[in-house]
Length: 283
Image (spheres, rainbow, N blue to C red):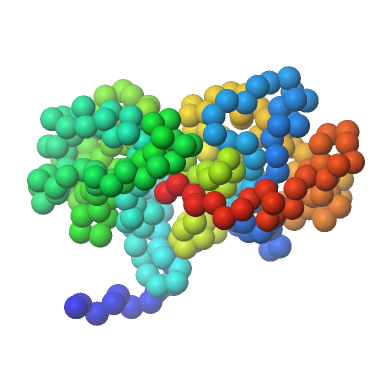
């Protein structure tokens, strides 16, 4: 086995806002229920998301993956496109939509990957997926099969996702072709909670950049609709503008607790254990 690469100082994007000390980390605080805010706005929520981890509105992410040399923090090494190394969950409808492009996509893939199956056969039941479950993209040579591909310039070994690049070539939104959990990253959802992917904090790109919600707001709207984003906007405003809350800092306990109560009510929201449980997030 070849030796592990030496540890290096991982890059943090210069000139980008950093995660401020004391900010909530993923899964630290109870999720905020969205139904009371939807009722205040007079909108109906459809889709699987019913609550949100407050950290989504505070933690940051590098805004341009392709312009950032990401790395794995624990290993202390550069690892470009590290978030694509595990493959991804795909709804059966997404799988079928991708397979319909097989003839057009195959020439874009690394020649060493072309003969490999694109998806694994194992089906994982999950009622939050439209088809009732998911399959995973295949992992070949330590990365998702769609990672090794040819760039727009015709060179092999290009960074990024072949599905994303192909959609752009066709004048399509990549969100309409890629598995939606890929488009959402670093966000995901589980048991109704919009939250961070479990590996978000493993990568150096999680230290600076845009707040994750702002970064992914348009994608959330494209996937789940404008009513959800309107409700999330309201929660964001309450979090960032509550009394005694520095805009770039962690709200006080009193300011946060008001968000776990129905607007205009003194009834507290459920505890973290009651509301979040032991969900397994999509990845």
